[in-house]
Each structure stands twice: as C-alpha cells, then as structure tokens.
Length: 171
Image 1 (cartoon, rainbow, N blue to C red):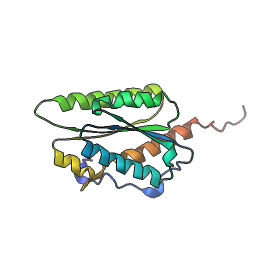
Image 2 (image 1 turned 120 degrees about the vertical axis):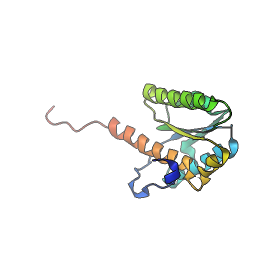
Image 3 (image 1 turned 90 degrees about the horizontal axis):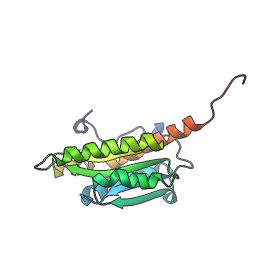
C-alpha cells in the first residue's frame, strides 16, 4: 500500500513481541539530516517505548544513504545486535542518481541480511521532493523511523524464536 494512503506510524502495539534481552544497532545517514534525524528520533522512541534500554541501542552515523550498507556491516561485525536499522533519505533530483542509490542500498542491505543472518532494516525515505520526505519523517504520513523500529523488533523476535531448539518427539 502506498504511504499516501497509510500513516507509517500506525501499527498494532498489542501484537508486539517482547524485547527482553534484545539489542539494536542504528545507522543514520547525515545527508538530508533534517529528515534522517527525525527518523532516528521516531525510531529510538519506538524502541524505548517497547522496553529496549538505551544501553542496548548503538547509533552510528555515515555520510550518506549509499554508505548505510557498510555502516550496517561494521555493526554486524560486532555480533551483538539482534537487528540493525538503517535510516536515510534519498530525494529525486534532476538525474537518475536516486535510482542508483536506492537500488544499491536495498541490494546491499538485503545481501548483508542474508549473509550475516542479522536483519538489516531498510528505513530509507525515497521521495520525489522535500515535502514528501517531511511528510514521512513525522509529518502527515507518520514517521518511517517508527515503522523501521517495529519491523526490527518483529524480525529480531522471529530470529530468536527460530533459534530456539524445536520440541522433538522420541529422539
């Protein structure tokens, strides 16, 4: 569903798994800081709201969205995070740079998630203009940072649940 038809910050809070013992990495792009710092604020507030302690969240900054996968890989190398949330903003300009960056970031985070087994969440706002970005960073369409945080919690919980030994009968 297009975000124009949905508030990104609306989710079923009663259907959230426990965050007990979980830790999260957050990688934030400095490019378009007005947007990305608002995404971070929403993301962090959501993690804390659901019981994650501030000590269990590590935030690092990278120059731009293109660097998000490398920042995530650096955090993944620490092997202490249950999920890594990547926050950025790419606004379409006069060239096709946005398509190249968005594709590279999405592919990089997907490949890192698969290779490392650590969910790397794509919390990148990809818009046609500044106003659309503001609308998705705490404006009329909510905050994509909130969406990224609850996605990270759900994926981290799935990872932990599947890692538990299965109940076996007989053997």
